[in-house]
Image (cartoon, rainbow, N blue to C red; front, top):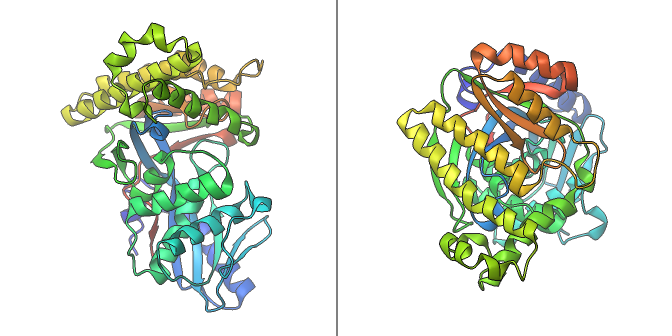
Length: 404
């Protein structure tokens, strides 16, 4: 098995070996047999396109080198059993995959939702036992829940569907599970980035069949993600408000999403629209339209090898999230770790970019830093946020996949 095919040439295989050995030993020691398959499901980095996917906008997203590893064995008992160190086992009986309100917000809900969505498509599936180990940081904006959802979809896809589901289909199934069963109104950015792999441009105008184009990250730069702190569990209402406020602007024009609204028509009718929606909703709509253009700028820059313009687009996205989208801190909260992390980064980085990462309000920031500056930047951020909360990642070429 060539692990570089999955993790990329710059990956340190020595970091993987102990994780893999411990995982396979845990499976063998607890189940009394060896696992038959090994799967990997990566985290993701949102490079550009902050809160545009749910209104069918454009994004740049990358799968990254942290992942959930799963040792798996197919079973004939019609049960999905998932074990992770430090957690009670998840056991899902596939004879009953209907939504259960008592599971809302749990990994059981995500598992049941994925299984239900696949079965609703007419596929027959069955049981498996999986042992997981993860270095996809929860609360760090790299989408641990989406990595888990897409992992379950890919295990079932390989074990029972002979690979019939495309990466986008697995993403759509996973989004359904998170929206309906888990209870979080996310768009498709996270799931698509994890399922497709690489650095990928996505246009969600038609969300179930997005336009896709893959790019290479500029050479000589690293991704550094800093978990600035904060608990996402209580922030769902803030995420939901972004989507609903953007859609409230679209509704004024008789549309469901902002992707259906002409930007110039929006600007021309701004005084009228303001009578129907809040100023914050207008600002968030402005962010949406501007963010789509920034994604296009960044893609053109990558095609032309213009690293400076690519980084400018990322920096501009960060400022727009701060000023227009307003998702860098929780309203009225004195604790503002994301804003602090961004401002510290802006003072440190001479050649690179920084912006809020993921849903925002709390959690992580993303910096794109020249390799020359990377070690210094990591040290400085570690002083403030702790060594365990600052990590370097690189783009990996593959999304969620069966490795063996």
